[in-house]
Length: 361
Image (cartoon, rainbow, N blue to C red; front, side, top):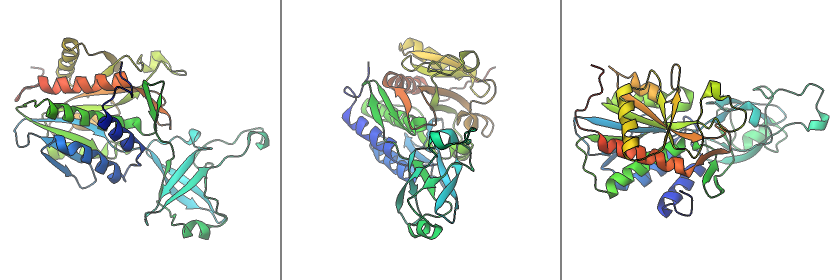
């Protein structure tokens, strides 16, 4: 069993620093810097594209190209309106949940570099009307302790400033990691660990590997869309999170059967190239790596879709990490699953051959 006590200290320090950093959609630069600093010893080249997608390159310049990809951005809020009496109203930046906002603490990041603390306020239960107010865009608000718009603006807060929930990561029962933005900074951590293993084990690969940490996934897979066109890979293996449907309030008949602690999740769906998927399943079996299975009826909802349908089509597959409580401040993963995902990606990359195709005929 994997837990924080047995985890490599340098990996643990990187993971905690990376998770506690703030990298909202469109403003991922600080998190990308942390990620690239950790990755650099294990790759030959790095670069960042126009919108901030970060890439590390192993064995550059080879004609056959393989991508391991995660996304770096997290959900957040944009300041949209400041009332005359100093309250702030927000709109979503990504899939932020109005329902969990009341009583949350937040940090507002301003253009002048200031970070201003605030709280999402809410009326007390015993003074609300018979019909409770709905938690929707026009009802949730941030209180900075200011009594006027001028006072708010004097702090540097402005329309377009980004608010992020305040919630650092912590370890639960020694086996689970909890925090905000595990979706999908865990993916960035896992592909960086694959790069580390390839480097430290001195694995010689007959192709180029791109470690890609894409931006703007939470608002439509935009970073992956851009970088897939630039790299034009032959194979893309995407890692993201998926729902632990064994936690309360899920319907397994509708949402499948996946559970934290039972291994990496492989996905069946139109964007997943079936021959590549079967190759990954074969790798799992031959290396005794625990996996679970999931199915999607149309899109995967992940960067897999952007890579699969890029250019003339890229053989793509999705390896997911089971996660509880997605898009909250207490997203939770099991470290056994983290290790399963890392090992499945590592062994899959080692199993690939230069020039290998996954065509149906």
